[in-house]
Length: 190
Image (cartoon, rainbow, N blue to C red):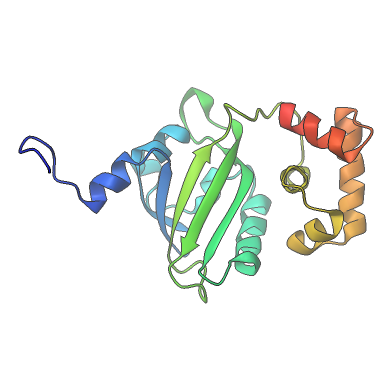
């Protein structure tokens, strides 16, 4: 039973007090967000609300590719999740890249970007980003960490498995790995 001094529980309080960043979106524009998201990206409501999600990405190409991936990989309920590199927006940490788990749901699976709710969890305490990787290398690294094969990565990113192998070889050279399992371990510890 709720005590008289307790604030009333409603959806707005749940949204604002959630332990992860939350965003309501329309056509990939940020309609609303909670304080946890603002803290994670080191920014203010005025800097995000009404703006494109693109401001949270390391590059325009990564923003566009992620949008395409979401279109092709939503499940039948309109849900999607992945781990990706994002970019802090403001303050002393502006431009800092970090690993983030993003999960969300389109309100209509037939129109994935029309409206949705997305959660963001900062993974930087568990996964550091110390390597200088290109946007495509970051995408492939995230999918390798998830255990996908070259064929599955190629299908997901709409590139050939051979192209994935070329990127894997570059990643192995950058981190000094002799095998894919070693590469994944070094990526996780990097």
